[in-house]
Amino acid sequence: MDLSLDAASPTPPFEQVRAQIIARIDDGSLVVGTRLPPVRALATQLELAANTVARAYKELEEAGYVETRGRAGTFVKGVDAASARAAGAARAYVDTVRRLGVSTEDAVELVRAALRDR
Image (tube, rainbow, N blue to C red; front, side):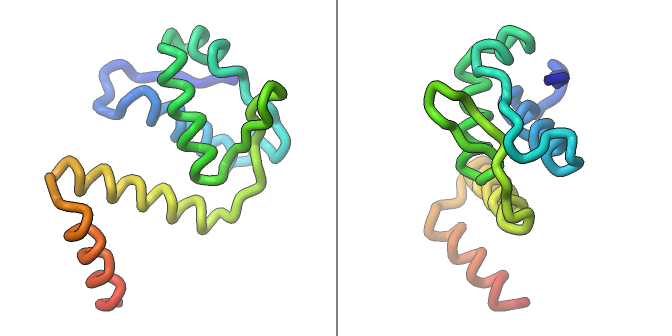
């Protein structure tokens, strides 16, 4: 898989990997059933720690983009695009409110208020 990292980017490497895989799924370069490279192989290719790639894969799985089939590997999964994008937006919101020091309760209330206003 042809991924590249920008060492000067403020975006963490795991997020760069995750975003590039999502982009390839969205544009059809990676189709349902495609096996992703093993964590260690991709980590070696990108000169990253295996845990960095493992985190990207874990987040992709949590968002429904991929599924891990044990020793068989990690595969692109069919996803509901709206749900996957909403999950990504939710993660970005959580990252932002944590960075700002907003409590979980306040963050949830902000979402409720925004939903009421729409």
